[in-house]
Length: 329
Image 1 (cartoon, helix red, strand yellow):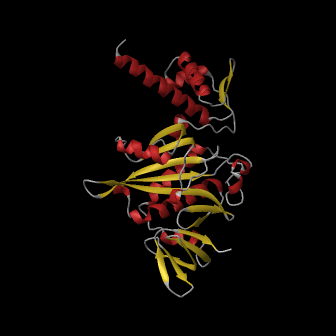
Image 2 (cartoon, helix red, strand yellow):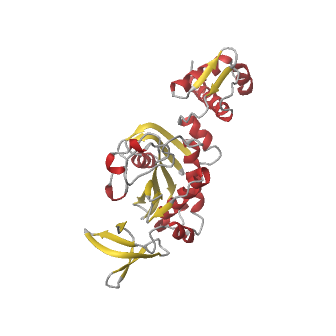
C-alpha cells in the first residue's frame, strides 16, 4: 500500500474516533447502538468498535453492551484531544493537547518558534513545572485547568493591557459557567472568598528583525475540580478551588474553550471600568514590595495603562507597572 493510502486510513480512523466521541458526549448516559453509529458516520461496525476501544484506552469511561451498544458514563470528565476539538469546533483556534508536560507556556513558545499558526492553545492534563509571576512555581494539582493561549501581536489592541484583559475574561467565562463570583487581585490573580483560585502569566515574543511584538503567550492555571487536600500544606490557607468537593457541572474542555473565546473577544473591548469594579484591593492598605524594599501604601486606582496607583505614607503617589503587592493585615 502506498504512503498516501496509509495516511488516508489513519486520518479516517481519527475522524471516526472523534465523531464517535462527539455522539457519546452529546448523549450522556444513553446507549447508542453500533449499527446507528456506523450508519450515521458512514463507516463499518468494526471501525466504530475500534474507535470505542481507542477512546477507552485514552481513559474515557465507556460502557459497552452487545445488546444496547455504547454509552459514556454520566459525570465523567476525561479530557483529551477529541473532547477539546469538539469544545473548540468553529472557533478558529488550533488545540494541542498533552497528557503530562513540564510547562504549557514553554511548549507554546516552542510551537510558536516552529511555525504553529495563531491563534492556538496548548492544554495539559497536568504540568510538572508550572510557573507564575516573578519566577514563582505554580502548583498544578489534578483536576485543574492548565493552558496557554498564543495570539499574534496584531490581534492585541494594547500590549500593556493583555494581562488585565485576560484576568477579566477568565473571570467572566467561569462566572458564566459556574455562577461563582470571583474578584481580581491586581494585576492578574482571581480570588474566591479571599483565597487564590486562578493564576495568569503573560509573556511576549519579540520579532528581532521588525523590532515589534510578534506573539503573546497567556498561560493560565485554574483550580477547578481540586480538593483542598491536594494543595501543599503551605498553600491550604491561601488557595482555594471553584469545586473543592465535587466536579463542576460542566467539562474542563468546555471551560477552557469558554475562557479562550472570551480572551480573544475582550481584546477588542474597552474593559478597564469593569476590571476596576472587580479589583478588590482598591481603597485598601497595602504592602508594596519593589526593588527589594517594602513600603506601606493605599491602593488608589488603576490607571488607563492598568498600572496600580498607590499613595505612600509620606503623601507621594506612584503608578506601579510591576512588583508585588499584598493586603496589609
